[in-house]
Image (tube, rainbow, N blue to C red; front, side):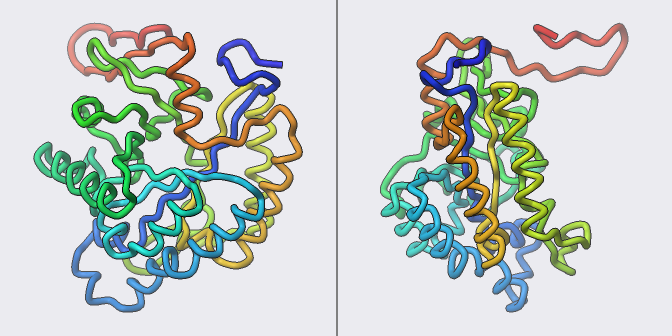
Length: 296
């Protein structure tokens, strides 16, 4: 059945999006470009497109699953073969900045430049102009959504406030939001670098990660939500982690009322349905009571 609150396709009550952020070297260079002189650190990041992506693509092909790959423009330029393989596999390509600089921590001119450079790189190398955006570090700015509308984007996947997709109101217009969750990101499970300091120091067992994510999937099905798993090929592309991910996705595929779809497919479902518009509401701090979030 379809759970009231979001119009999933007939016979489905929830969705699962399998997504990858192919950050490669950009994730570290956004911290400090001096890491270009650190071969060990760069090779750690290059593992994603060089080794992880081919392994993940083979796994996805074997399962008949299409995923969403969010790619910084710089990473696309560094690894055009990986981009071509992703496209040839029928997977979705989304925008993920240029040098993985988080919009919320850079100035407006740099944010616009990152958006334009990323678009140019992906148009050239993926053969398509992305309409789906994911902010590096999931860190948007107050200007991000106006920029996305200006450049023709129809969907963002960077916010956290709901369990289902919705139309995010931006002035008199809107963009589809497909929310995410840190609990469903492999960075918190697998990431470790001594410098730049990355991760908690604990690298989880892939079996434990698969169990944790299965609990999340079950709960999203229960509430009729959209479960967006976010992974990085330099992390989740390691052999034991791909094996665990394969088992998780095989298990998910047995859930008859779970729709395994790309972010774009989910966004299109939302755009075509009578889904409420929730305006972007940011707090102000000053004299008088705080303004309530609409609908809260």
